Length: 383
Image 1 (tube, rainbow, N blue to C red):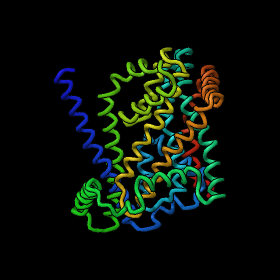
Image 2: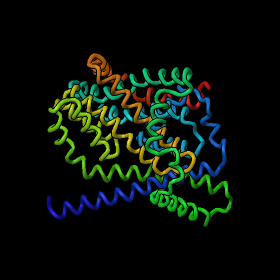
Image 3: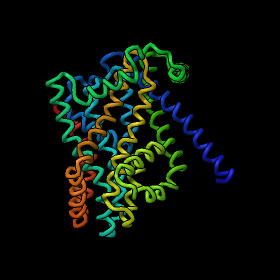
Image 4: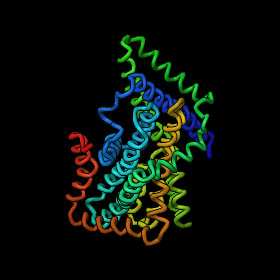
């Protein structure tokens, strides 16, 4: 590697560290702003007894609008960390975010629409991600709701709470982490900047929450762009080299690539043209895709590190719910060989159908990811 290239990579990595700090400051700003507005400010949108289907659709719509499950899950962590959203209400939103993130690679497959053979392969590669997430929700959301009725705590909630206690500790909120002090200092800097222009306390908190959201959105976008410049140029070569080692290795490849670029959408969208060209088979793509689902949970876990105080445990718990959901999905729809074939069968069947009637592929994307969630959310759902 030349000195110039080494310096470029080092600069990008340094930029990523700075952006990551600003991202965590944004989480603090969002939580601090919402918390400052007082309890109940979000009740009009997220009540404790919110219908789980509505929560699921909120997660789908939010993720498709910002084109990033990382942004959505980070915002959910911020809301839980501010005490304005219960973990139980946030669980379906996390599941919805997992579904919403699949829209990017499904849209990418539309670029092959003029060539039937390419489109069939590309669309199947994209929708195997969709069907994995759909099937995981179909199984795990009812399990979560039933177990909550029986035991008082959902299965994923319980798993996440146990791990959160290990990682945060019963006295975790009292530990004065220097990193958390740095995040709070960043939040104070933003807050003081707003106070220079605005005197009304309520307006300050509203603007602080808006600033937090903007910082989260911008920094994650820049992190993705920065890391993409380092990783994506080599991604196709690494994918092809490592896939011959089998499913578990491919899952790890998906995890690592997604952690490096901080975007499951990039990982899965890179696979679509490779599938369209016939360079990768669907059975090779599937484990990388579900690995990408695991990799994208790192963002929410990082976001939970910025939360301190009494709600630190809840913030870590909802971040771990995201990880638990994807791990349980793999145990259900990948580990057993017969179950593994179902998402692939559905993806191939739907690709065959969409190839003969491409307008239905457009209806599928527009209706499922945008139209239906927007309609139900606007109508207020059934609470």
